[in-house]
Amino acid sequence: MTRSPLSEAFDLPGNLLRRCHQISVAIFLRKCESLNLTQLQYIILSALEEMGTSDQVTLGGYTALDRNTVAVVVRKLEERGLVSRHRNPEDRRSMVVQLTQEGERLRAAAEPAVEEVQKEILAPLAPDEQQALLTLLQTLANANNHLSRVPVRLNEE
Image 1 (cartoon, rainbow, N blue to C red):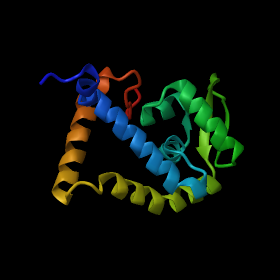
Image 2: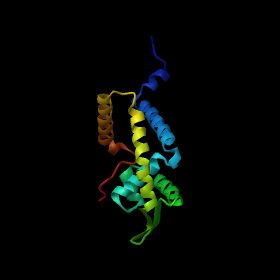
Image 3: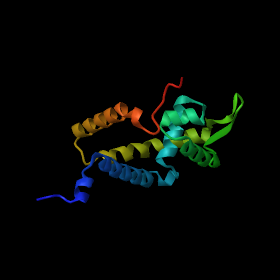
Image 4: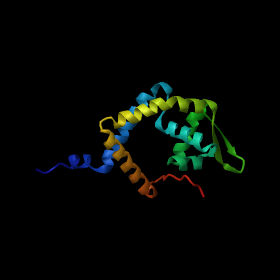
């Protein structure tokens, strides 16, 4: 029995990753709805808390987000008082972003919900399968980082 093009496409790794991403976003938005927080906002807040004050380009490198996405997410966070930003006095073309105390509080308050999200995403798998999946995903992400349109860049040169 031959398979249809659509059934074959459903089994492609890229399509499966896309579907898992859709599911992950949906779970995150549901669990963090009361905090009015998205995955991208959470990753930006987390990066700022860990790395400290940063220009938007470097922040994009930490989080694997392009400069337009970083600008939009940071603007929304700034409107909520979760970050502050100003022109970089050393390079007037760049914006420097800093986590506010309110942003730090919200990120910390989101931790339990974010942990619940991860548990729900992985719930269909046995514990050993969960660890295997995480290891495989990390391997794929690390080994293919250079192929990304926006690779993770933790050490800016």
